[in-house]
Image 1 (cartoon, helix red, strand yellow):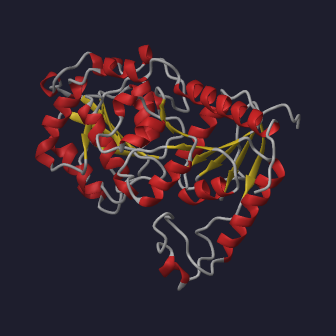
Image 2: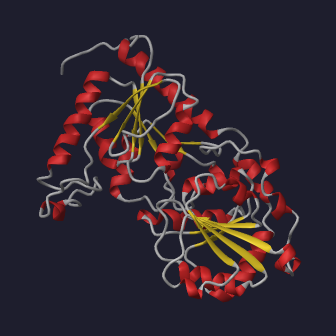
Image 3: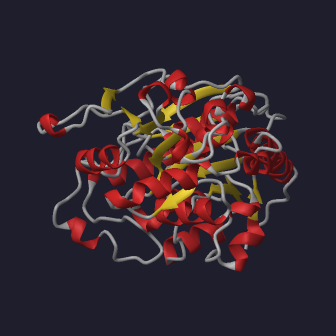
Length: 380
């Protein structure tokens, strides 16, 4: 590696593919040499024009000492610090050894309070990726304090009312981005011609609702879906990401489970309304394609999806719900979704947020590299 070239490191959380997809979106736009450090998912294919290594370190959820787990939350500035856990001991050693050998100029941490504090203790500047949710606990706030800056993968208009002032001041807000590039002119077209449930009266011109679940989707919602489909008999409900269950005899004829689809784009484009979770990547992909959708929060730590669904509803970007509604609410909810103004997403996607993120990361890496190269070292 040329010593004159800044190097960027990414720590990527192993839980859920959304963190990987977000990192790869930024890597596609990054000009600096880059490394990825992660657990469990390091053997997957990673893409980025300047990505030259993917390092796997031990996962702190493996080989956890049963009694030591009782002490995992003893330290308020850490979310997870169990005692007597060999995977954690190895993980710390592997990460700090890699930092000492590679000397990244900046680490982008997405996301881990423990890695954030370890990075700062190793004397490396870091940029911490933010997420929605109630993150005013000591561990999150300490990680934010330890960061050079914070990246919000959403514009300032989607900021939460409960976010502390110092967090806002350190945040670089990004326009929307997702793993797929979508042309808004080719999507959401069917829904744009319909404004109310009463427009759909027969099988030849039926309302089409597509329900989309990811691989990390919620639990058993089959009864919710059956009740929803029954509440709108002149409608067609297609479910992506789930199979029907043992009570399939109770499934109405206008509800169809399509299972996992590797390429669901055509089905989504045919929808008048999409129903999905309030996960970040699902939300941004549907917003990018200008779909009208209802976001139903799934249970996540720190109320992540509950807070995001509230913001989506507040900004008129989607119909945001904190939980599955009762059957009699569906006609009004679908009617409200049909009236959403998808042009509100234009402000979210004014620029490509991945390019903005890459520009900020490269700038911080260059600043850090210059400081490190020209430093006068002293002993205290």
